[in-house]
Structure formats: C-alpha cells, structure tokens
Length: 286
Length: 81
Image (cartoon, rainbow over all chains, first blue to last red; front, side, top):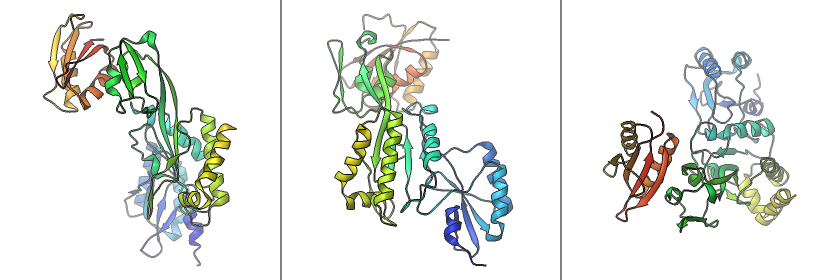
C-alpha cells in the first residue's frame, strides 16, 4: 500500500523512526484538556500505542507507536472522547496559551477564550509554511509570546483616579518600570516607561485606577533553527475586534507574500518591514 | 505612623519569598477583625509583592512608609475572622 505521508502529516500523524509507526499529534487549544479527553487519550495510548504519551513543547499531546493499519480505528476511538488529531506541516498550528485572567492573579486578558476564538478562526488553515500563535496573559510572559509568528500578550493601560487614592505608595513600589511617582499626595505615571503590566492597579488597596485591558501583539517570532524575537507594530491594541482584524491582516500578508517554506520573519524581511507595517496600520486605523 | 493605633507588629526582613507573605499572613491570623498590624519588610521583591498578596487575601492596606534604611513598613487592617 502506497502511503501518502503528506496527508497523514496534515492529520497529525508524525512518522517515527520505527517503520509503520506514527506519533499521533492531538488537537489541543490553549493547553487545556478535559478529564473526559484525558481518560480517552489514556485508553487509546494503552490500546493502540505502547502505553505512554508525549507532551510537546507547544502544549499538544502525542501518542507514539500508533500503527498505520489502526489509523481509522484510532480516530474513531478518540472521537468518542471529543479528541481530534492535530496538525503539522505548512498551516496554522496549535494555538498556545497560559491560564490567563480566568485562573492566574497576574492575568490581564482571558487567554483561553481568545485561544478558542483564534482556533475556530484559523486552525489548520493552509499557508506557505507553518504559522504559530501564542497567547500570554501578562508581562511575566510565561507563554513566551514573542517566539511565535504572532504573539499576543495581555496588558492594562492605567489612569489614576485621584478621588479614590489614599496616597499609600504601594503602587510606586509595585511598579517594576519605575514609571510611577508620588509627590504631595498626587500620583503621576510616566507613559514612556509604563509597560502595561498592571501591577499598580492589581496591588492598589482602593482600586484607584481606571483600567483598559488590551493586547500587545508581536510579529515574526521564531525559536527553531533560527531565533528571532517578534516585534510589535502597535504598542497597545485596546479593542478586541481590532485585534482580530490585525491578526487577519498579518496572516493574509503571509499567505500572499511568503515563499513556500519561508517563515513569517523572513517574509517580512524580504518584502520589507515598512510595507508590512503599512498594511497593519491601514487595518488598525481603518 | 502616629496616625494609626498599631495592635501588633511583625518583621519579615529575616525571611525570603514565599515565607515573607506566610509570616505576614500568620501574624494577621492572630488578630481580630479591625485590628491593625504593622509589617516591616525589605525593599525589592518583598515590597513589590507582599502588599498585593495581602490585598488579595481581602485585608485593608492603609499606608506604606519608607523607613529610609532599606526597609518599608506596611500598615494593614485585618478584614474577616
């Protein structure tokens, strides 16, 4: 039987060193799996694999030692537990996320909800090369957003509300950017220094800050054969729908301009960063 | 600090994270609702993080004072039992 490896790979079946054995990558969104999914994955690994699974570097799960002849049975079994194969190859990959504000006290955005939304919008979309999204909830950057083709980091834009302030000075010390000063009972924020970490408002005893939660988006990150830190075009995007439009524009730019097998960073470099930034700004200001 | 009627004091300058917060939390547990605790802590990581952790526990922070000797004093009113 002729084996079409590219079709197999699209469905997340990664060829192993061991002939006719595949490591099956699963579809995971934002690093979350339900207990039901986990139980089914364990069952399939036991029955069709060799009884172990591998956690990938990008929050997916792979079941190694799946036999070529069992592929249909494995897919059917996984479906009973709401588990689907993932993808590899030239397309949008697993959307990764930290736990974000739903769970983590430091989180500034709902990372899982956003991961789900991006997964619905883009997952497995065919492109000239692999394309990775990563979402992290705050400046602590547990999810390393800038190593992704598109990285999204949560932040909070703050404005001091004098009437509720008790001039305790906690925010001055909580800020790691030395952006806040307290003089004669009045707070001032140096917006050039503020990195939107939100530590001031999260530590404020009287919540004397108006908060605008938003997104810091970086483009062109890589962390494989070549390493590059993704860079922002817009310092802070407040509007959720605008964020999606910017993501649409970035992926569209890649789709239209990239050579086969070329990562986003190299497309931006080759076509010209100014041209890319112009495209993003057009959409942002549009 | 004359503004506040301090019921108890705790010095957390002799421990590091996460024991800083634990020591402060234990001291707060000894108090009754409405009583005031004065916490002496080091500059740097403790003063960046301990006030926020105490806020997240639901207590009321009243004042942070720079002792100008590399330490800060945080005045906290206990909320809850």
